[in-house]
Amino acid sequence: MEFELENPFDENYHNLPFEAVSSLFHIESEHIPPSNYFHTLKATDFDISLRTHLISFISQLSCTFDPVLPYLATNYLDRYLANQPILQPKPWTNKLLAISCFSLAAKMLKIEYSPTDVQVLVNNHGDGGVIFEAQTIQRMEAIVLGTLQWRMRSITPFSFIPFFINLLGINDPSFNQVLKDRASQIILKSQTEIKVLEFKPSVIAASALLSASHELFPFQYPCFFRAISDSSYVNKESMLQCYNVIQEMGREEYESSVLNVNSSSDTPVNVLDEHFLSLEESEKTNIAPTTHNKDLKRRSKFTAYGNNNNNNNHSLHSHHQC
Image (cartoon, rainbow, N blue to C red):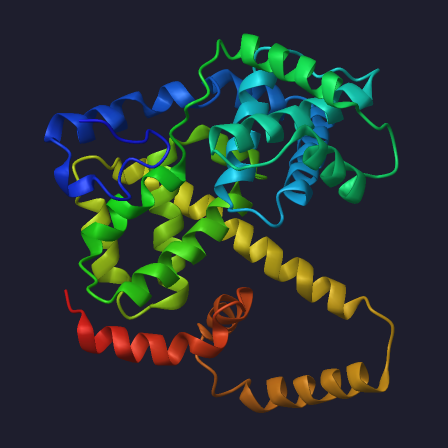
């Protein structure tokens, strides 16, 4: 049976034979950088910083596209860098590499565009540096293709999201979509953390989905956790490790946002906010449960769906039980 490798479970999951599903989990490691790549990056602060910069640049180019595009482009970038050293004396070459990975990912996802369109994106989102001609980008694409041995069809965490959502047994398509969208955001953001490079795409997908469900539907989280961790395709220990890395990223993001707020200049609004927060804390010192601060962090960490969480949890609870 034919199916799209990049999106194997979206439409065909129920029609795929057991052997096909099993083989996808078996070969997913072939579509990620080798294990020593993580340790190589970790040993060099410059490489980590430059990788982060290149991923940010790819994200800028991809801001109007599906998150699968920047993720796939970064997958190409990591697999290339695992085989070729970062060119420190020639920063423009690394930028050209990022552009070429983005261009190749767009072609693989069959996104209609021309070399001119890519050049326009680069000009709009670049830093005013070197301008690359279309022929230069195409030559770099050929180098990337050769380094990756033309193995461009990649299994990413997005490939496994429909499979794991199906395990949750949610009948409402709107809830499935909310979970999928939030998990996709978490997957894309997790790519900047080099620790995530240690995990397989399916493990990242399962961990991101659990993180999204814990954020959006905490009442159903224990049930969702059992449904996913009981799957024969999931290494529970690896999933928990990846889940903890993703949760730590969320905590650091929250603490960074709080730090930015506190370090801003004192305005009348800021001063009043701090005054009332101090009063609130002093009043609750003797009555607040010990988990108050942790819960406050968790609730404040993500705001994308904050206004809808209560309604979603109530509706989901009435439609889905363990």
